[in-house]
Length: 318
Ligand code: SF4
Image 1: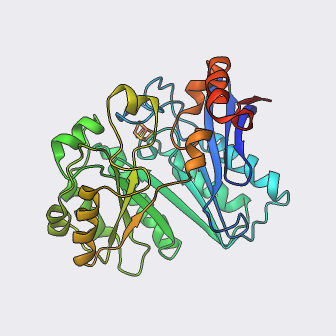
Image 2: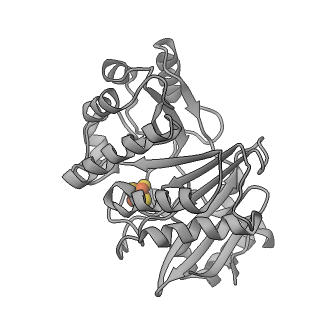
């Protein structure tokens, strides 16, 4: 893998663009303030060149050019590991490796082999794998998620599985995530079949727009709070969100609709995490699949970005 560009702040988050046979991927490292790098380190890698799903607020959608091999996924992780830990021994209490950058992991069975390769080549007792999926409805994807449950069991429940739900209304979910996928009851049934109360809870992620339907009763009806938790995030300021007129319900202060949803869920014993991300990440462009697209127009991108944020965040060609 050739690294052709990077951008960001080493203390908050950095995004890298790697090239495999003339195709670009992006991957990210970040910490989770207030924790330090040596307390929690998050690495987010791409599983595909582009993404075939085309979610309405994600810049990684479109320009799909195939899935990465296990080795190509491993290379992204290894590049970052070796920079900080050349002997590949990572004694960070939490090293989260997330297969969620560009691409839908359940469409790429090589993700399972990539996890194996990482476990075999990097010594990291604090390793937690994380899969973030929209749960496409295909036999291959369903088998993939069953294999994930097996890996979770081997890791004694230390596995983070996240479903992108984004609305409690199925029609709206179809607008945001325009493929055939599991509906809300299907996700609930999967958790009941494969997850245990002693495992790390499955996350139901809602990136909340101003128009998103948030009906806590539907969550309470289907999901067990011992198996599932809810994560609320703002819509990231992507170009796709902007061109599809999807406006975040909040940036810092939670809006009334989202607040009502959260209160009602908590009253029904659900854990609710509010994840705003780092404001600086938006400047860096490390939130979604923004970077590969922008690198094609790096001169214009740098000019506009420097005008707003200064030279600190300019894109650096290596
Ligand atoms: S959010 Fe995930 S599944 Fe949807 S287009 Fe982006 S990378 Fe693909």
